[in-house]
Image (cartoon, rainbow, N blue to C red; front, top):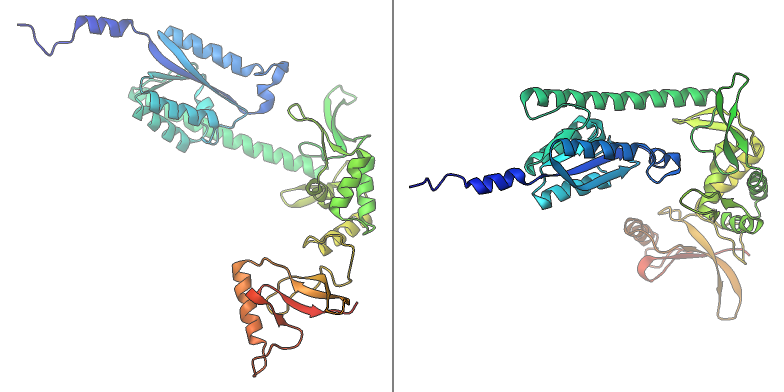
Length: 385
């Protein structure tokens, strides 16, 4: 009688003839790498893809799905395609291999490497590298750990070297990264033929940025009004490969007016250095702009009826800002008054209520100048015109 527990030879043969299933993971660190050469994926991604396919063929495996992170750093595991791959491995349950070009494509952080490989083990998947000879033997696991540590060291050391280079460039007055609005990054050659990356004025936008500082320094504009005016003059945010040019917003203009770069200062890690670029505004005008912005930090708005106390008065009890509003009495007389701006945060509202409950006469009447409103939301005080 044949053994009932013996494996079926036909089933075993079918399992041997069925190709293994694999997924391919490829990655580049920057968007520039992903778009180099004018193509959608540059050069690195197709090279990794072909290497992974050749490795799968040599193992008799079929790549059933590919995951590609374009412009994502391996210092963090929070990459969209990596997370999709881990979820796919868990849901499918029938994947045999995960193929990568090099281990540092998967992780450059030892802790993330351990977590990713634990997820592979739970899904019953084996990690394969086309460039490193790793396997599940003790020696292969040791090599894997060493290569992962080397990748983490390389990443951290590279970051330190980049920061060191950026600091030296800032100390020499160079501009770090993309030039602010009103300037453009240019590449030139020195007398020895070496490439020099420097900054030049944007002939189209620089005059308008300079106008923004001089006009705002007069005190006659709000940031939003000035942004609308500059838009009518043609000031736009430069286009990018993915986005067209767009009008400047009040938020962006506020950032520009605050930026010390426009007075000739380069900032790195909180330290200011004299830049080599041409300033668009002198120091005195820039400081005048900062003074005006600081006086309007609570969001002053332009109104038809202005008052000299607008944006400057706060409640003496709770510290909340008081705004100027025009009120009309029963005889039709219009007079300005200070009113607490609603709505208040709950904590500030409770403080305000307690403060004004204390400011009462012994007979219970409110003290002059503080008229309690229903809900404790406002306090009025009549002002001289």
